[in-house]
Length: 181
View 1 (cartoon, helix red, strand yellow):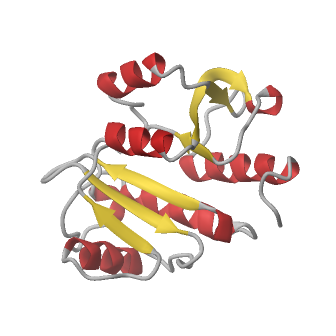
View 2 (tube, rainbow, N blue to C red):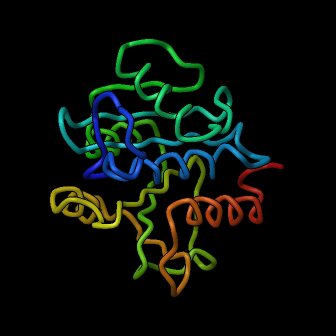
């Protein structure tokens, strides 16, 4: 999320902090499922004032977040160095996150409207699905993904909200029995 705020969050709505509301809905889409224990969410926030910040949500430990105010408390606690069950934070950008995942043996998939339809794509486990924000990935990130030959996967002919993309991917993985219910 190239414009998402990377410091304490104040009184305004999450949308006014570089669309952190989208981050909240993405987390809840992953955690509010029967397979949440098999899922982790990694958010890379690259907005002001001190990018990059990577937040990881572990589905084994975290629970769905009950609203914006609670999410603000979680973010502010993480930024202050406190521990929050199921959440971790570090200063790491998108490219470093992807290289780390690749080194850990993850199969990488780039969610993109012009990619190969997910229904016909081979998906290998463990899988990491990446999607950009409304502006896509940075030029540097796109160059790296192309150089790494990361397959582009489409969820269909229409654009979807981030949270819907997560739901569609999880549903597809459950259908294929890659994730167990």
